[in-house]
Image 1 (cartoon, rainbow, N blue to C red):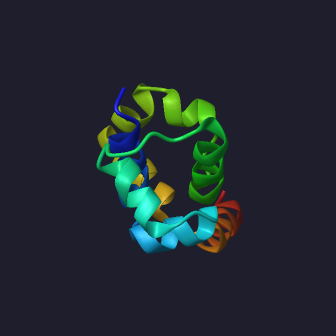
Image 2 (tube, rainbow, N blue to C red):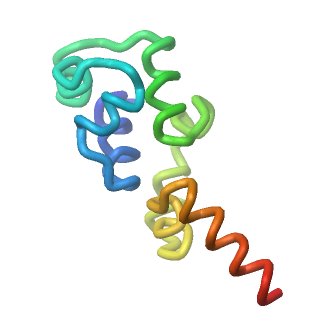
Length: 98
């Protein structure tokens, strides 16, 4: 599994720039870019910071079918791209109609 490509996949699914993800994860932009490009390795600790910033667990990160599931279901893919606040608003809306 290419860790850098997985980070890039999840980052782009959330429509995050490298700078946004790096800032949210508390790491440098250049380090994140190097990891995504495969030029540097990442520790589990730093990967957990990235996952937290992305709103996923380490298990989600390493589950191969996560990306297949999101890309095959456009509704879930769009929901995954929403901010936490937008997801809360969507949930409130759905609760109001069900």
